[in-house]
Image (tube, rainbow, N blue to C red; front, side, top):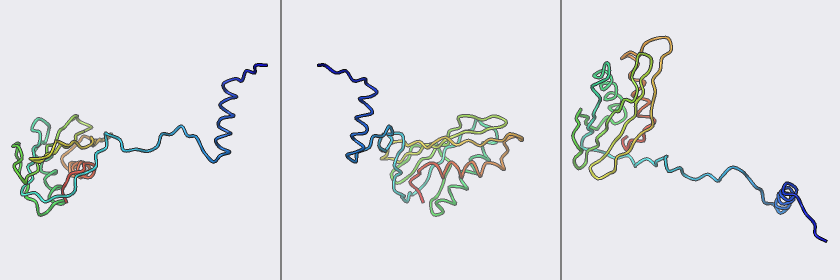
Length: 155
């Protein structure tokens, strides 16, 4: 005599059998490092930090100055210079990229590179205001957010 078992019944029996043996099934995959998440480089001391800022956004000088001030607070012993040059040995080049700039929002991210390293990219950070326009006095919090979320190899 041939017996037919429906698929849902078979799955229930299989799950009950595994549970009885102490095994469990989960639909959540095991946690593994995501390729999009980078492990930060260890903190280093550089002879100079080169900072490139965009010039095509409103109040670009104030924005760059806020980032310089935040970098000086994070790495007080590292000299910082505004420059778009390629880093030489012992230097770190950081570039601020602005992906959105309008009356109520500013969004950007940092990229950085050493002479021997590949270019790294930090996550986007958004400064938004619902009831007022974006103004230079808001840039320090934006700059701090960029540095907190980007895993720059400085300290």
